[in-house]
Structures are given as structure tokens and as C-alpha cells.
Length: 124
Image (cartoon, helix red, strand yellow):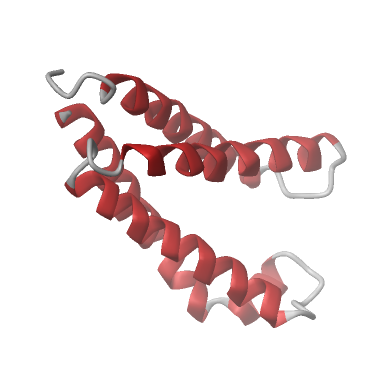
């Protein structure tokens, strides 16, 4: 159970550190990765939903056995992003730096899977 606790608390803290500054970077994102953002509702919607998941990771980390079933959508959150970025990278539609973040999410998704397996028997 300690393993799952540390995995989810670390994932939540890391995610907040990475995602929260994006609220203040809309203009810079458009400059760094043109064209400028034309649908801010999608940009801020993505940030809001992603930030909400980071809070969910912190909740799971507080009591992994109790919130074990939330680990399933947590894995989907990670692996669906990884698949999307992999396809976009193959199509050369996103910058290669996106692969780094997808790799981190893939590693976290695998750790979430391990956590899910380990919490099946709370004595671990």
C-alpha cells in the first residue's frame, strides 16, 4: 500500500507543478507552437480537466485501498494521452518534446497499473 500511496501522491504533485503554470501561458504557447490558440475554451478546458485529475491522484494517494477503483480511469487518463501523442508524433503533427511528456505519462500509467495490482491485497 505504501507503494501506491507514494506513486499517486508523487504523480499528483508532479502534475500540479507541470499543469498549473499553463493557466498563465496561453499567449506564450501560441508563440512557441504556432499558430496562436484560436479556441481558448479547449486550451483552458484541457488544463482544468487535467488539473482535476491531479487532485484525484492526491485523493487516491491518501487512501489507495479505499479509492482503488479510481486507479482504473487514472490509467486510462495516462495511456490515452500516450497513444494520442504517439500517433501525432508519427504523423509529425506535434513537436518532439511532446514525446518526453508522453514517456513520463506512460511510466506513471505503468506505476498506476502496478499500484492497482498491489492494492488487491491490502497487506502488501
